[in-house]
Image (cartoon, rainbow, N blue to C red; front, side, top):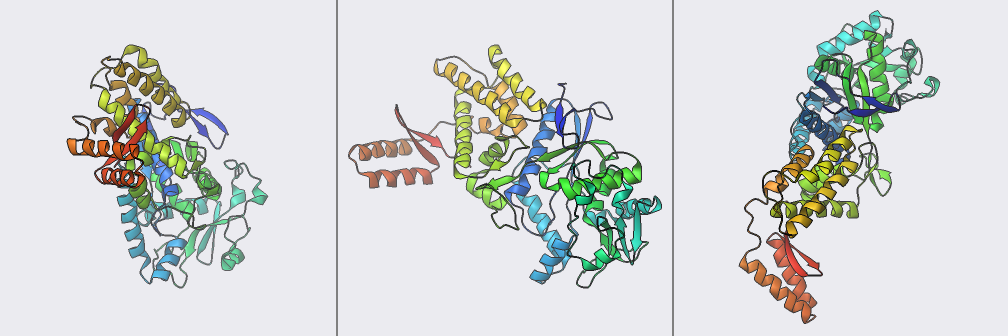
Length: 458
């Protein structure tokens, strides 16, 4: 096994992966709150941690990936009221959409996908432990975490505790009940308009957002598991509060490494529902194609912003075409030994803070040299490329080329007719033929050696 290092948000530096049980890795990745269809920004953590699991499994680790769904939340209540339906019905509908949309990425499901609504016994028990330790207190049916009970509060986001507004200022009743404005809700007494509630030692109510994940993560993976992940917009307050709750209840850190993904940006602004500059995941798959979308996600280091723009999307589409073309010229079987260094460098890059962008650089170098050799008549096997693409979930691009006889006589005849139209400067006819070929699944690529037909990605 390679030495694997991941950037830990809490320490601000790379940390070596040190499993509690040799060879076993637990990953908890915060999933979405299901009040609407997810967009590509929500999908980035899903893809990053699915690919990370693939890499770790390939390296020989036994990986358990947990990704929760928040299915009871203020946003769900508000959205359900606007639509005039029960909040449980909305959460079930959007949860089903989330699973269907992410299934289309074809990267596999997480091993466990706990729901807040089915995790109440563990959530309530964790709150009880915090109250018993005087790290939380009851106030008229609500329960609040005592932020100053945690001496390390603020260590994850590296903020001064007195400057850490919990974002609960829109709840004036809650502010009146708090002993300290910095405290945050663990349990909320039922309010008018909320149509779900559970029994607890403090009365009917439902949990706050942060305690849900602490309890679900502990139930699934125990305390001190290897990697806790999510988007970097969750560092504060969500993950800061998760970490504090577990420290105060268990005298132990919830996770060894906190791994956070960057945002997807559209013209420099974070993609978000509140801003309205979003592309739903389902639409993105329809428009961009599954393979190009996954390749686009892998094209940037997971901690960096990912630019959602026409040029980056087209680069991903071109990359898919390039891989399919490589699949048509490579034979199944062993690759040349002197291409092994690029293959190894690909995996070394993934071991170094899961740097998919650098890994892809080595993959493209491998492809370029393999294509050069194949064009010279060498017999080049695809095994090394297949291994690299397997970690990215793109190995099927090589399989799609197996047995591909290329364009048929009719398509080639149209291509010749297009050449003649262009020679006669009949651009309208040339465009018509190009569109007809596209309808049949072929992209026309004009090059120095003439035009060629390239299969369009799915």
